[in-house]
Amino acid sequence: MNGAADRSIRVAINAWFAEQPATGSGQYTRRLLRHLPAVAPESEFLPQRPDSSTFAHRLLGENLYKVWFEQVTFSRLARRAGADVAHVPYWGGPMRGPCPVVTTVHDLIPLLLPEYRGDWRVRAYVRLVSATIRQASVVLTDSEASRCDIVQHLALPPETVRVVYLAAGEEYVPQPPVEVEALRQRLALPPRYLLYFGGFDHRKNLPAVMAAFAGVAAQEPDAVLVVAGQTPKRDSEFAPDPRHLAEEAGVRGRTHFIGWVTEADKPALYSGAEAMVFPSRYEGFGLPPLEAMACGTPVVASSAGSLPEIVGDGGLLHAPDDVGGMTESLLALWRQPEFRRGLAAKARVQAARFSWENTAAETLQAYHRVLTGGGRISPLPGAM
Image 1 (cartoon, one colour):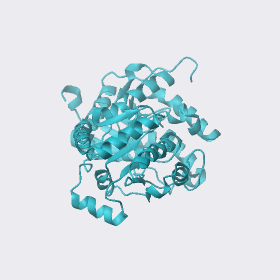
Image 2 (cartoon, rainbow, N blue to C red; image 1 turned 90 degrees about the vertical axis):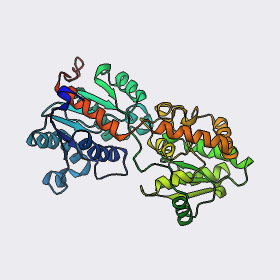
Image 3 (cartoon, rainbow, N blue to C red; image 1 turned 180 degrees about the vertical axis):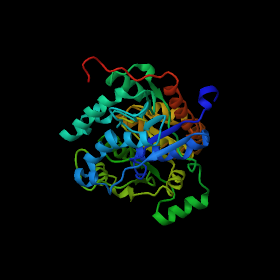
Image 4 (tube, rainbow, N blue to C red; image 1 turned 45 degrees about the vertical axis):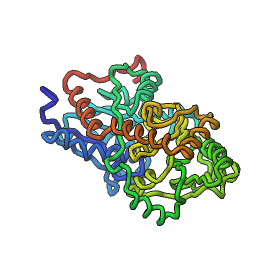
């Protein structure tokens, strides 16, 4: 980087989610804080964290305190830190920032998907952050699919919304057989398995997972599906219990539910799978398929949302409701070792196109852009 991009800057980063690594925003915040200093050692990146011991937190409770932190406290902390730029790494920027603001909008799930709109409090919050986004100097997002959604549904000028892809962590590489075997023994996994890992809420399309696997199980008596992740506390239309879905599909006895998986165990879990199935109906990015591909595991995914951008030719794509196509792809990967090895090699090449070093460097470019002429997004007439 040259010129203005080389000079030292101070960036205040809203670290509300930094201590919540199980969330996508938490992982994003933590990895940015780890990689930004490496690409800009002359600059300062200052995480601004909430304080649960304050009177405001005790008075307002967790949800309202979050809004107070976003709209009031974070701006005060950034001003006190003498920040040149403030970065909110999720959709929750302030209405009035103390300096130019960069906001990351990972997706528009609560705006686009009716099932995720929640009660009046969630809808009120979405209205608030839809208004505050217009105060950002630059909006970052994770994919071209999300960029198109943001430009269209938030009516932002296209030139103010920039794609900065995420990446799998450096730990996601094919694991040695001894590591895979150790995990297999500890979790009682079968010698060969297909894998689902990616949440259980409505958009994840679990009925398609079970239906596609039922097609595989009918033709391959040794096939087993491993389902990873904490199952819902109660069965609901929004988050159906996958065990009930497996029962309905007739594959409960062939499905191995292993519950919560630690970050340390995920690379070996991916590496041991013959393939991963991920038929989500909407993803702003889709990190689990990329993690799997980085470990050399081919992915059978849906062609919806950002997934074609992320999976590329490192996997096989089908429409979310194309259960027959998913079944055929999973059968091919199960039955044809050479085909699987070829696709696994492509998966690793595709995954290598994404790196946190690139993410940090492109984020840094956005910071410098707002300091060299990237003015704020002008509000829509009558929007304020």
